[in-house]
Amino acid sequence: MWSIIKATDGTWPSWRRLVLLEAYGEYPGNMPDDRRVPWKSDMGICLLESGQYEDARQVFQELLNSYTATSNDEYLVKASFLSCLGSVEIYLDQAHFALPYLQEAETIQRTALPPLHPALAASLNSLGDCLRELGRPQEALEKLEEAETIRRTVLPPLHPNLALTLYHLASCLRDLDHPLEALGRLEEAETILRTSLPPLHPDLGTTLINLGGCLRELDRAQETLEKWEEARTIFQSHGSRFESHIQRLTQQIDQIKGNV
Image (cartoon, rainbow, N blue to C red; front, side):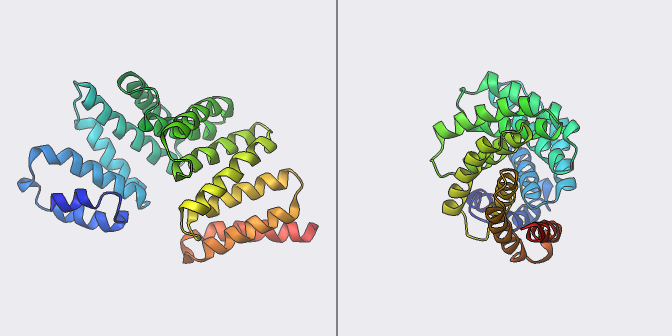
């Protein structure tokens, strides 16, 4: 079963892989020692990607508490746990808890990895998001600009991870009252996501919300409406999962229509 689990990494949706991982873990006494940590790490990642944040937090905390690192490779494994745990805390609106995890991950990766490594870019992206959540947009911008440089160097030009960094960069630029600079980043992110993702993907909807907000700051009401109405259509296609997004967008759309 382990060979199937590894073969489905990146090809099966997280919820489906989670079923396999849970089945594999039902007999931990039969699990080889060298598979326990990767099995639990895969569980945590699938839980995180499936939105089961409390369970993911528990998994990564247990991994950190029990894992001993002595070599560079082992420290990099620890950094991956720290980065995932930091991401979990951000999703749980606990950015102040996320910050030390993400800072430690960055320190380890700067020591053990080449300066343009994708894993460092991922940590910098999460760290920038965290610093922005803590009201430190200028520090966040520095981390995100470094992540952007790495991702433009090592990823294809239409990779969704580059769009994610551009999205967070734009959010920082909006916080710093630079909506025109933010607009360019968001328009590039939109282009990437329209090319690389299905047309009703939630990440495109989220980017359109940010893009609409940026256009509104630039007094481009009609374009704002177009972006927000498309975003609402995307979220409506996913049923009740994004009900709060739909309600907020509807209120904002009605408000703009009342002023146009």
